[in-house]
Image 1 (spheres, rainbow, N blue to C red):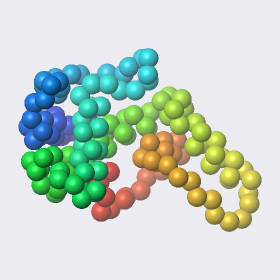
Image 2: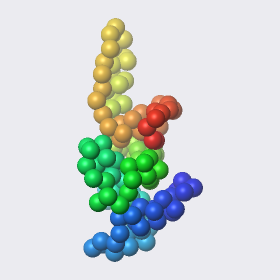
Image 3: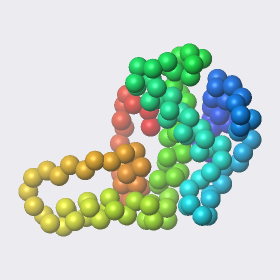
Length: 143
């Protein structure tokens, strides 16, 4: 994992507190062969930090008022790391994101003038970045 993964995981867990799942941070990250996705604490941390970001973005109380909104920018690195792993591995991208590549290739192959807009999510952005060897800096937003 990225260098500060364990530290950020502990910070997230201590902020949210122990719930019905107990200490979910002890669950190792592993590839689920049935789904092709990563399971375990890395998946839970990704989902939780994304939810915190959406709470903040929606003007809602973040983490039951246990976390200042500024802390989200630091913790979102857990989500970014997971999405990078999940959506940048060529074998997974080929299986899960082939449709965006087909669509982009078809537009480019047509060679028509004008602009084509594609709608997607960070899943598609990560896949295109991996497949086309692209990078960008989305400042001031965390990656």
